[in-house]
Image 1: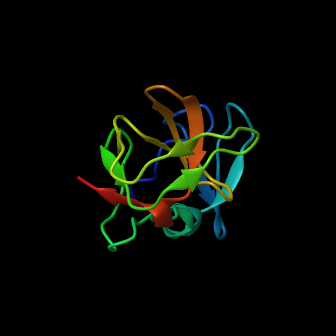
Image 2: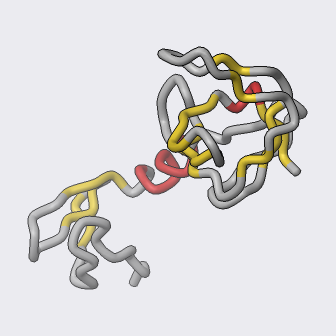
Length: 113
């Protein structure tokens, strides 16, 4: 007997195979067995300006003076940003910068420390 994965929706162990689908009898969720490999491929890898892979919680440095939208202030080159959080979208880094507060940055304007 083949060892089937737990249900990704309710984590039930009572899954069964029906053709190319795996079905959970508890929550009626159906998924393709190849979906797990597709989910791994869908995860986007975010890299800094030097090509280093960024992760949640990393510390980065700003490599260019950045104008703050709606303000006359500028984030200076070399500003250290600690404990970043990666998100999907145009600006892929959420962070807090001392003296500025919560900001969204593009990964192409930072380098990993």
